[in-house]
Length: 289
Image (tube, rainbow, N blue to C red; front, side, top):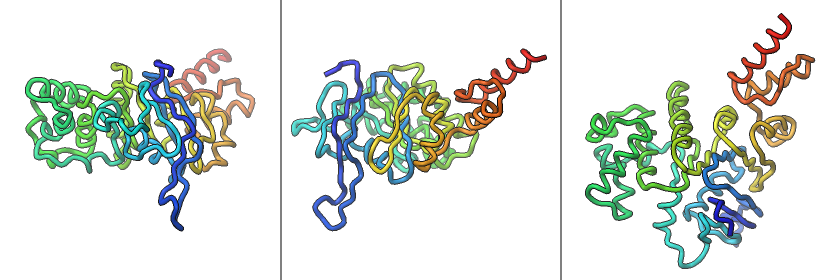
C-alpha cells in the first residue's frame, strides 16, 4: 500500500436499508486516492452521497462492499480499533455548534482527548494547542460558557474539539453553513491557515464553488452516488457545461473571465479568485494603454 496516501478507497458502495423495499443506493463503486497533506473538496447536489461517503472515513458507516485504507490501514477489518480510527480522522459535522454541550469551552474541547486517555498536562496542552489553531485565546475563553459565544466562536470551539484529538485527517462537512459573510470568511481563513501551518490532510464538503476555488488542491464531484468529475479546480471549473448538467455551477469570477475571453478580450479564463482576475485585467489594460 502506498504510504504517501492518506486515504485510498476501492470499489466502495453503500445502500441504505439494504434488503428491504425501502432500499436506497447512496454510493456506487467509489474509487479515489488522497495524498497526505492535500486539501480536497467534495462537491455535489444534496443527496449525491457526499456526507455518506465521509462518514465511511472514520467508521461511522462501515464499508460493505469495498475497502478503505486510512494511512495504510484497512479500516474495514473486524479488528479495527474505532477509537484509534477516530483519533486519526476528525469529522466536523454541519452546524458543529450543535455538538457543543459542556458547561465551559475548556471542558467541551477536552471531551474528545479525555476519551482518548489524555490527562493532566497532556490534556491541557492539547486543549491549548487546539484553541491556538482556531485563534481562540486560552485565558479569555477557557472558562466561558458556550452559551455566551457568537455563532462564529461556537464554530471554532467545535472545530477545536476535533483538533484537540490531534487527527491526521480533518473532514469538514459544510463548515460555513448558516454563517454571515464576515464570519464565514474568518472561518475559511482559519481553515486555510490551519492547512498551511500543519501537515493535516483536509477534506472539505461544500456547496460553495467560491470556497472550493479558494481552498482546494483537488475536487471530487459526486453525482447520484458516483464520482462524475475530478481534478484541480483551475481545470475543473472550465467544465461549465458538464457541471451545469450535474446541477452545479462555477465561481462567479470564473464565469466573468470566461465571458471576457469568449468576447475576444485576451485574458486567461482559468483564474480562481478576484485577485487573479484583477491582475489579469490590469495587465491587459497596461499593455494597451
